[in-house]
Image (cartoon, rainbow, N blue to C red):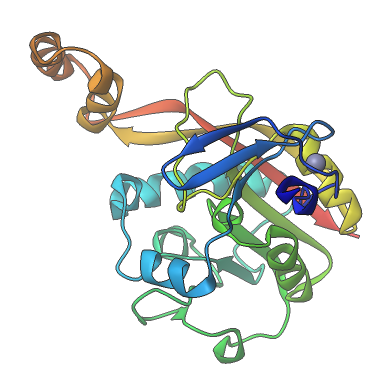
Length: 257
Ligand SMILES: [Zn+2]
C-alpha cells in the first residue's frame, strides 16, 4: 500500500487513506496532531525552480516593512532590542532586515544578493545569533524539522526563535497551494515539534498583518461576481491606504532551551 509509507513529519503518525487532491498533489491530514502534508514532496530542484524569481502580493516592500514592525513590537516583550544579533532565515527581498533598526542580517538562498542579505550560511557575519526569525518559510520546506534544527544551530542557548506558518485552524479561509505550501499547521503540531526540538513555547496566536486596502478588497471580492466587485472597488475609497487584518497564519515565539 502506497499510504503505509506516508508519515507525518511532526509526530511520525502514519497517514490514512483520506486526502484532498489538488492538481497532481494529495494532501493528507494527520489524525494525531492535525498537520496537513502534501505528497508527493517536490524535489529540491523543483522547489528551486519555483522560488527563483518568486514574488507574491505580500512581498511589496512597504507592506513587508510594516508587518516586520508589527512582529518586532511583540518580540520586544520577550527581550528583543537593538543590540540583539538577529538573523532572518528565508529573508526574501529583505523587508524584515530593512525594518529592523539594529543588528540584523538575512539569509535566503534564492534572493538577490544585497547589503546584509546572504545566499549562504557560511557567508553570515556571525556564527551564533540571539534571535532567529523565519516568516512564512517552514510551510514551504520539504522537511521543516531540519530547517528548525538549522535555525537552532545558529541560535545561542536561551535565544528566541520566531516564525509564522499557514494554519488550518483560523477563521480566515486558506487555499491549498502546492508546491508553494507543503504543510498546513495546527497549534498542536507546533507544540509537539517545538517540544521535540527542545524549544520552550512563549507565544502562539493567530497572526495579523498590514495590507494595502485595495489588495485586501480584491482578495475579499475574488469569489463574488464582477458587478459587485466593482461596487466594492468604489467602497475602498472610504478605507485608509493600509488596513490591519487577521491572517490565516499562526505567529509563534519560542526560546531555545
Ligand atoms: Zn502528526
